[in-house]
Image (spheres, rainbow, N blue to C red):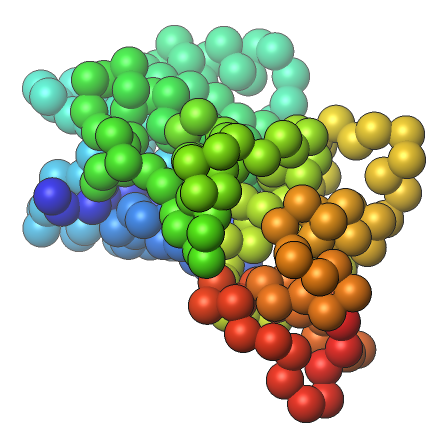
Length: 242
């Protein structure tokens, strides 16, 4: 099954890159456009499953684009992004035909949740294989829909914070992830009073999935950087710590 196709239109190249990288890691096909004209060129080539559309762009703004696209029969859903955070702005965005509205700055994980919700309301697949959205590593299976972890078929109890961190690791496997980046991804999610740093949460998670947390096979420390998740379960390489 083809991956759901999403067009991301924003005049900020940093936002385009961030959203495209994140959604691609979540198994979506993503094309980006810097303005309305670039979006029109993409639309002329292929119809997407969803459009992420910035409100404030040079030239034709997002409201005008949404209004114009909505006049076309059978056009895909639109999620509007905007630095305007007032209720009236959200209402205007929805009135012109946007299916959802997300104020800037936003957490990419919230955008992902809204994309899935909108696609689900439209009756489409939110991922290429929604019924089998799981990731396996070693004896573990992480179910991304049920938000559960099992080991050899037996469920492993995780807190909400531990699950969120593990999902980030498995969807960015074999990549060095800095502590600051990890905390940015977790921002906006509830933390318990004892979760004072990313290292505390990593240590908790290691106790749940590592046979020897002092010498982790999956979540390895990268000296001077942060952490790297190795689903193959290899031990730490020379030059890295535990």
